Length: 168
Image 1 (cartoon, rainbow, N blue to C red):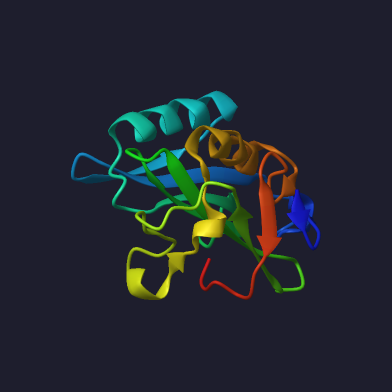
Image 2: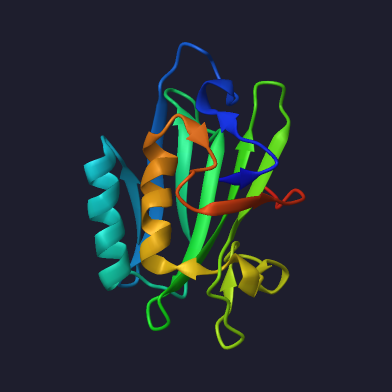
């Protein structure tokens, strides 16, 4: 559950009559994959592939974008360590009043020997603190929920509001 409140997906920025399309960007074997999800099963399958074969040195994205629009209304950015089975995420969402809402995961699996970031372009400036680390299998349902549920942030892990973490 999120400390500081939740945001209904219907309140995300974009035309009210447009379906929110869940998409993702992932790094696998030296290539970048852009995926459009049709349902929760597609998210589960992609996350399984990412956990098994993905480049855990790179950050992954899950987007919610109103159909027909180019800019997302929400962006969940996460990174994981396969070796240590930890992951952390930030979620940025823009509401209909153009206010930015930002959350970061809160976990119990912080490690000083693991560095996770939420922006591959600025890794030194976007290090996720150890208190944001969750056990990787615990974060998976939150990633599925972020694509398919009606409220952000996903309730299956703990989140805390954080100051603006940057672009969508």
